[in-house]
Image (cartoon, rainbow, N blue to C red; front, side, top):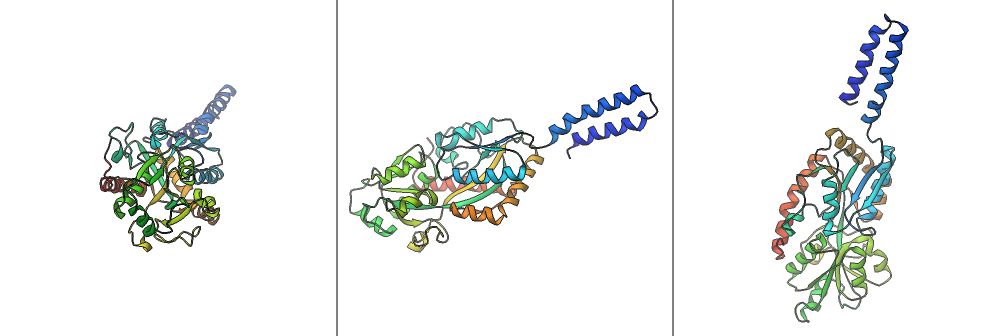
Length: 342
């Protein structure tokens, strides 16, 4: 119960302590005052109208299914509509900027992914402060990257892919990403730098066109999350040659990790939720509690696993700390890959 709600309740109780000594007109005034308090009580209840989660990427990508799953489960717990709205563009900055400028009332939230702490390493000008313009709510889940190649590429492992690249002139092979400055772009650059290859980056406007380019052999390699590529791997349109995780994915049990193949890299996408700066601690705490509760549900864990993701759940402070630490990590990755803010 908020302080505003308490104040209204006490004003009504205080009035009623004297109303019995007054006339019928006084009783009527007491009823009017009680009725006047009702709208304030309604305003204090959160959420009292639909909540929007802005996903700053195109619909149909690797992020979208997880966001919609969590929105559906959060809707059940809040007993209020939770709507997913895709606002793609500029490597996620358009949707993120929209939320940064939104009213901090808890009704417009950001699906805060891995890209948020990457922006300072890639762009000289960012239309918001990634670390200070948001109120972190919770880290939700993580999902590893998988490296896939077109079947025409004579490679079934990281080593054979490098061996093939070494037989060609530098910058002959292309790789796709969901956009310039995105996390899979940075990680792919780190992979080629670590392995001593020189490939050509071809950015696309989303996960689907990036994968289609590798399926059609316009590009020969792509780094993406697991679930969007599963049907293509099973149908032979793409071949998985490594997963950037600490252990093999149950969805791709035959695909060895990077570390198993002698490449000490582990990375992927993570999913979180944040609100605009200035959102009340009470709203942040409520959303955090509901998220952490639903992430403990066995059905949610099973559904996330089917999307290649592992449920996590953190306090707002823990999520904020992760974001701050990630800024330095991605800056180092960008510098190692020879990528500097533009």
